[in-house]
Amino acid sequence: VWPMEYIKTQLQLQSKAKGVALPYNGMIQGLTYTVRTTGFFSLYRGLAPTLVGSVPKAGIRFGLNSVIKESLRDKDGKLTAGKNFVAGFGGGGSAA
Image (cartoon, rainbow, N blue to C red; front, side, top):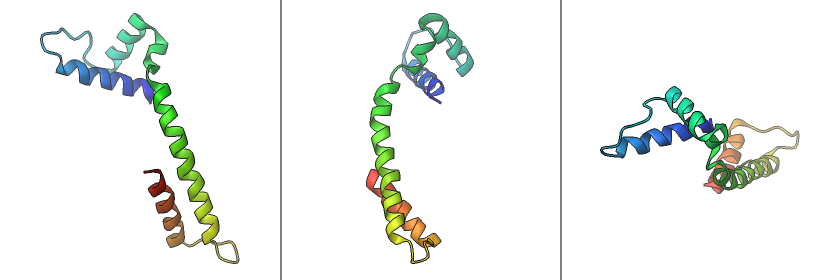
């Protein structure tokens, strides 16, 4: 997903530049141009800050979802759809 996100962002930025000839005008051309001029790993430029921000957020969301689900289970260990929704809502809301 990340290389496509990188190329999409580059296309958006280039479309706002006035008087500059665009080196490419599509995803495939953008991928080819970027790999040829700056190397394959440049497609992943900026990925580290995104992961640093999203990994803890996902951990909190899924961890809290699991804790809430366990606290809402009945004596038989079953969880209704409504309680499952509440657990998902609580986990998602905490990460937002």
